[in-house]
Length: 115
Length: 113
Image (cartoon, rainbow over all chains, first blue to last red; front, top):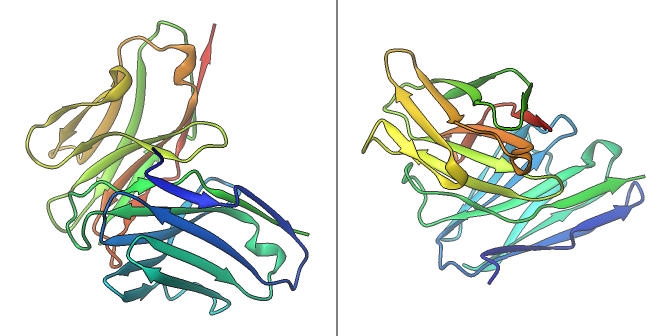
């Protein structure tokens, strides 16, 4: 049973295109996240989503938009892709927001390559 | 504000040798600290976490870490390295403004036969 799943695993696309990455968690968690891992392996938060409240990292361009159809899903839409968007994107979930001791469970990642 | 510093971007050990991966933290509140491992082309897996219950924390795969408040450290150790331990290791502290984890830059562990 996969706790946090993402699709696709690999995504190769042209600059200027629009793409989406899907994330699903079957843990019954209330909070989901999107992290970006750059080419140097550095992980940085992009979005947190808890009970329909979206918390955005100010440094994330508005070309990126998370959408949550329900508590178990948090998809990431990216418009007008740029070369600098190439990275590995990780979805994660935790039981609650603001409970600092909660473990965050990560998906397998989506490697996005923009040509 | 919280932050994490991992000393050494790359650590190489021989199989059977002691593994020591260093992590220092900065936190304005009592910290909750995590170690995650990332195998090539995979997601992050929790090794262990410190949540103030005990200063010596045991995790999976024979890893453990000791929380030392006086040194603001949470170093990860394993007595005897195995080839399968080769991976990227991330130390993290919770408490970001978005409820997120704040990660160190990672340490790549190589294990030589």
